[in-house]
Length: 414
Image 1 (spheres, rainbow, N blue to C red):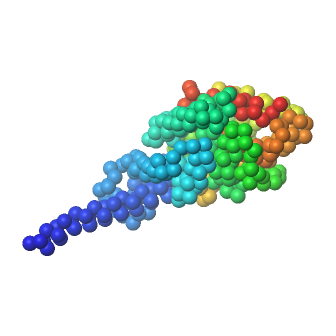
Image 2 (image 1 turned 120 degrees about the horizontal axis):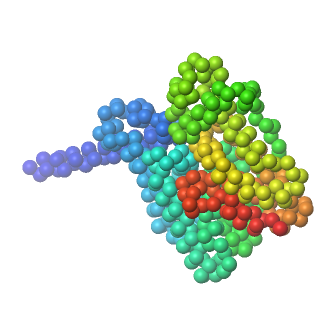
Image 3 (image 1 turned 30 degrees about the horizontal axis):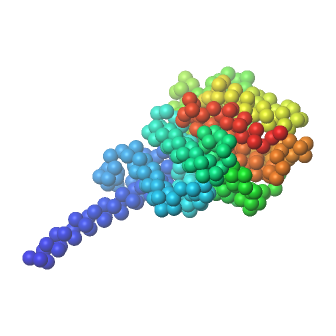
């Protein structure tokens, strides 16, 4: 009798353990696919195949792909919360948390990809990431306020602004680290920023100091022979831009683009032989449009740097769709297998080289605060701008990209 009872008690435990292992394998498969292809391009059948299960087998554990996404994000956020509870709060926690996140397999890639993709208001994770950004800013403000009261930060610290800028730069650094891992030390740069807020000397090892060079402009997009005067090609690019921004590259088909443009797929293929070729034209068009608006023609490095906030205001006011397109594609293309990965990698290299040069020239003219590294400031500025644009897409009423850039540059330049 007692033996029968013991067997009956063990059986449910065995089934529960098996179910837990199956759920874990589903979430692991989904996490990898979301990073590789983007949430929109992944189906439940894809997840089932990667996990070695049938489609009905996955549905026994999760009713939808949205439910799987929630569970994946929950798992990472729970891990973060447990780490914070175990280590406590303090100004030194930011760099340590960045190191913890970097050590969790898949964390940086997944959150970076999802954060870019979920900027679309119709994305199932949009509201969650919007609230997450707000919560992070609120918690950081509370932490900075306590540090001011404890005299760990100067009494005139811009608590609200620094909270926005730290969170934004952190997001941008994580994205850049997926393209330039040897160049971007997320935790070290976060440590250095907090030390600067405290008025402490910044350790040289904490800042990215890689020598900057001027990489050649990428010919991946330029070799397409894009002719802006051709109305049909321009229309195709415009419609493809809208679809890539709303759904991502992988989840958008050439047939959908052709239908939106009001042409047949064969006509589209006459102008762009592959989806990758069309993607290149879309990105080249976006960059050319922004370059025209920014009008970088001055030889005065101080003027160029101080004009950046107004350039960002024009971007958000005149073409918010270009910002959304960039945020979605740069996050999705962080996967090395993505056809635009090399383009964005070289684009980041070029941006860092340009801003390193501007800061170095500003320093030579006596306009950069003493002790700052032009290379490190270039990394932080590019990361900050990208992160602010991301936050603005989620919360435009609370985040002004131009004002935040202006406040940051005011600390650096004289």
